[in-house]
Image (cartoon, rainbow, N blue to C red; front, side):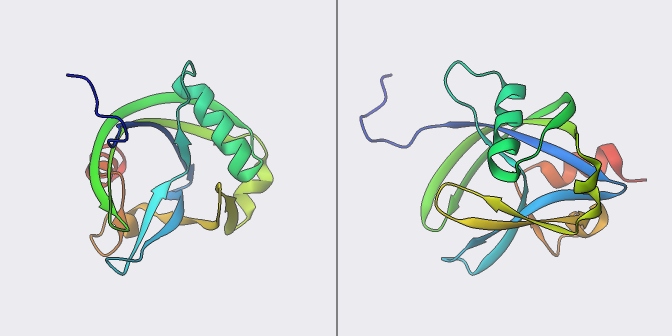
Length: 151
């Protein structure tokens, strides 16, 4: 089946799980239609011909000015959603990584520079992210984190 021109597309993403102890670095987003604040690990779209780890390194450099080390593949998740009234479908490659510059671990929050907006990223404890009180995306990530990291 050929896609219809202008139809929604599946978007491949590379997201990085960056830990500071039991805290995960996530950005804060807003779904204005639902009136919902949500959180997601940093990263972004994989360009044609780009490998997932390359995309992750590029996105962290573009968004935070940060270099990554020890990038290791963790899992793949599929996320079908609606945000701000627009449907989305993502195939998400998750990686664990470290920030090369240790001073990043000393900051509590960061400005993340997206294409047309500046977002805030911060460290949030795993138990808060997976408590059910916060919205953590992509779908399946809270359960994956609880299964893998909760003690």
